[in-house]
Length: 192
Image (cartoon, rainbow, N blue to C red; front, side, top):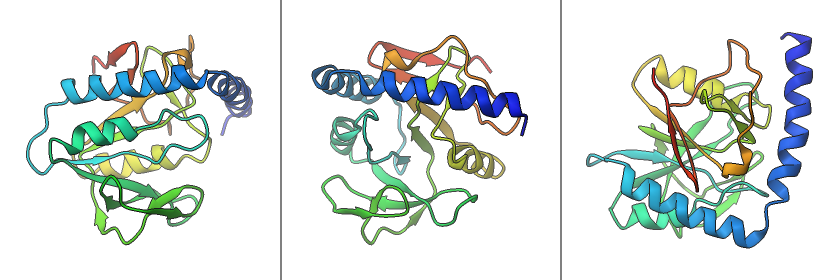
């Protein structure tokens, strides 16, 4: 990988983590509720749609209100599981309220079955108006989206606080683009 790109991403990650962590708790909670309303009102879902979310870690936007709103519409959920470093994520079925256990770097479903998502709600550190995403640096979502998109149509929606938007996210050819980004301020949608 290009040394400039590695350095630019590392610097932006440091800044983005600090900015996200500085968001007050009450602002985070309000943002999570607003994002849930936007997703619940804006997603047109057919029966059987499998939605991949994530168990929020640290200062990530909490999807608990989103899961609760979509569960009322009887949707199916799955959460990511790191099976092996350097490989795409697997997704295991999960229902809100079902216990989560520590996995390889994140909380994962207890006893979930293997699932293939139709829609992925993707965490991020920073994003730009061109729907580029800066993640934690492991490349898991980039590999996962490349793998899924090679065989089927999936929708990848970044979920973040509006304060996480930056003028430009440095990216390379291995970085997957998102189809949309949703924050408490609204939705950015791709034109491609």
